[in-house]
Length: 218
Image (cartoon, rainbow, N blue to C red; front, side, top):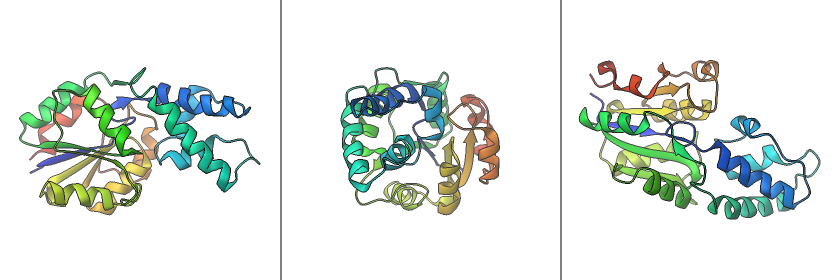
């Protein structure tokens, strides 16, 4: 029986692409670099701020110093607009309620910096408590390393066999598989279904309420 459902945040619970794109484009504009269309960020996000910067900088401009400078600038720009355009996907709040009604707790594990992850969850999901919320920290490696999932399992005294991991990218599917939990890919997020299937998702769902299928909680 599933007792815990761990969710990725961006592209799974929330549509944050606009705020992320606006923030990174602000950094690029400040430095005199060309910006990217919002939709292009679908394949740039999901693997931490450092990788977002690397994927956004123009070829030939990447140096360790430039990347570190842009990471700082990006965090500052994004902190100003965490929930300016970002909202939960339709049906997400009702789905979270439904999961808890089935006797399972809910948690969040994101590659977004931990302070931003916690603030977004507090603002957008006020009144819908999570058993644990974890973003990127200095002591826990980024996904697809499974250390963050293991940390949440220990904190919630839950076994891998009792856990579902839900996300929208190949990074999420790799994370769940490495942690030994069942993985569920969602198609309403930032990546295509083919990527999720190729990454070994145990199941694919197309709407939030698909997660409430009794088969996931038997």
